[in-house]
Length: 276
Picture 1 (cartoon, rainbow, N blue to C red):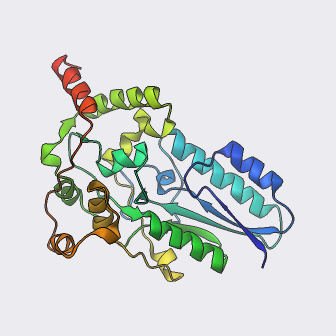
Picture 2: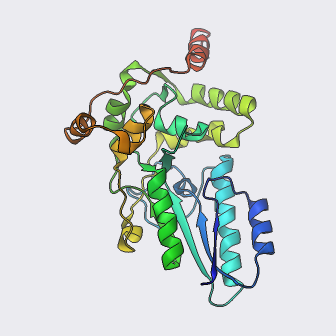
Picture 3: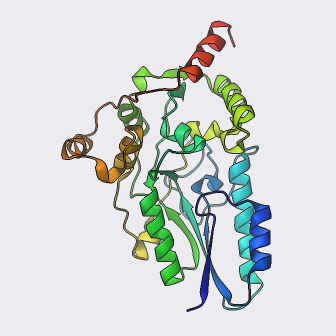
């Protein structure tokens, strides 16, 4: 069987590393699976709900992670076009949770950080890391070719997301204040994925359709709600009990997140008190 190269399974691939990987690939490398992100579609007020794979890639200006992943996809397409018989599967997962402590970006998108933007919350999707791994294995085994969104079927409405996260106990601030915090977090951690330009992804919809991948035989084992609630409670979706699943089936109940980052909350309170 010919080699199948998988790049970016942990979201850490950059254009520079992608160029090196493809430059080092031997002649036997004729199939690639590139794990990107649904964030390359961008978060815009005029996004269709849901977004299909035919939509344009237009990451929000200044959001380094999505911009870099869009460039990685372009580099991968150039590799495919450069040789006959090559296949390229680009997987675009929504927010990935599970499999340990979520990274700073996922913590913000899932609401583990107890700070929200004032106004209506957009619909949201969350995929379990195990389900993403299944999608990668399927793409490898079937040598899939094309772009495939990776998300559970459907999405959670904004108000239901808030109920599941227990947002009534959270600090809600204007977007301009959250942008200040985004810059602060980036400076402390040196992580461009937590930049202030993440704010549009908290304000506008970017949920996706999964029909194309489901049509290839992928079946997510966990729903958006299960993945979110499990992450907020520090568990894997498979560890949710019968009572948890019954609550989710009935529409969910507020989830209280223990051990919230008090320093972050205090920062916002100080800024609000100072009129920022």
